[in-house]
Length: 305
Image (tube, rainbow, N blue to C red; front, side, top):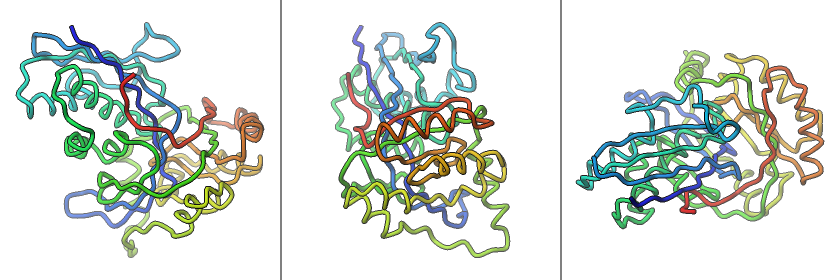
């Protein structure tokens, strides 16, 4: 049987502007994405029975299934494969084996990453011959972050985040991630955002010129000062300990800090690898911080290996 393996990165939002809830229940977004050197790996093996199946295991213990990741039809990688199969008319099935490294429910788009990987891998093993540009409409149907994760790098996202365009950027950036002991539900964070803003005027989201200028210049200090996330108050309202984590990282000298996406992972931009170690040591003792990850970005999106 034909097999293919795909590596796919995590994403962070350097800025995340959230507008008023729409009639369809979604919020318009204006965001700047960056892909991080923190990868899940998906291996797809084509089968003759037409069945789409998935297994998910952790990097730390390949024999153990990963908690809170659905299997079967509720798994987003399965949804991606089924969407591609139904539209292409293939009679083939696929076995998907996912090795999880990206934290689950951490605001780093681990599920969306696996969906992007499934699109690239199934396209390969089923011999569909689609380009990444041709895979984008499928990605947009699956979730706001999936189109970006096909390409990686740095990009501006609009709509619900699914409309992606490249952004002029220079340099590589060092990050420290403080992973919380428990995940946060994205719908719960958006619901809390709506509750906190009830009766207020919520403006249409914008991307700050200062952030784009910092990326163009490749200036980490300027970028750190321009990081922003409109969901921060909602995430902190649900998890007050996140405020303490952010303060610890900044007191350790981080250039900037923010909550990643809908949380609860906290991000800290640092100068270099030495500075990255200093901030990591400070965060290791923070209450509610289950793990500290050192990484960098930007990196390419989903790719065959």
